[in-house]
Length: 402
View 1: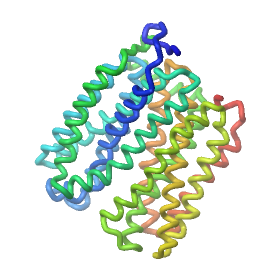
View 2: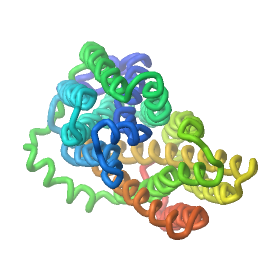
View 3: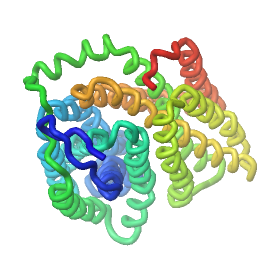
């Protein structure tokens, strides 16, 4: 089986081990974005950050990642991809070392922004996987790589908490820096060179992104759907730790264990890719949205500090992760089916849009929990999933590829 190569020639399609490597790499890199979240307390104390600014420990990495989605991921349509991957991994490594050795808050926060910027490597690797995959298997490959990414995200928080408990928060970041060095060396050997065929300048590349989203209905719709679902996802995961601590008296360790329920969502990603390759996009999209709605139906039980309430939250977390993961794969598969020369920009716009929605969901969640408690959280989350479903009902069948 052959796939397009760099200079328009065909090369033998890589073995499945390459895609498993990309999935593993995505998980390891994506974890860097989330290591700081459960460590806000010890990091703030160590660096002398006041309570009102402690949240910046986790926020700056998210900000850097959001900037990178818009400014770095589109470079996948312009620069030789392997070199770009190694360069961004180098930035991540240096930033992790700076974070681990930081003695002042400013140094840590600045390095955190760079960790986020460099961590957009995961999206470059997803693009790499799509370009390497035979067209008939692109959905499945996106699912496998996204599954690895999701596992990295889900394991990052409990792993960071465990390592910090055994030693220091600095060990988490220094250990990850060493991992990134090894990973860069392996990818440098394993990945083929890929040079995009078009000769756009960087300024023209960025300027083209506005018209791209304006003239690409599939991109707009998929970004809107995922924004609704991921906004609900952030809403839930921002506030459920507060609920678990308030109603169930969970410790930080207990909350970390609860977060592992999201691992089940990683298993859904390959299934979603298979469904997309079979042309079942619309049905699978509907199922994903219904799953997110189900999260907040079951999650409503969490208002009761009982075994049934806790089981409702567990089921809700599983349904939520399933729905968001499934549509993330379906959305990327849909936009990757468009112009191959614009995949970097399409993916950057798709990711940046729903990533912004996730940030807004976190902000909304904090306000809603303070003012309306857990019931209001469930009404908002349910409303977002219904909004996505209503929008899906207005979509013509032929407007979605495959």
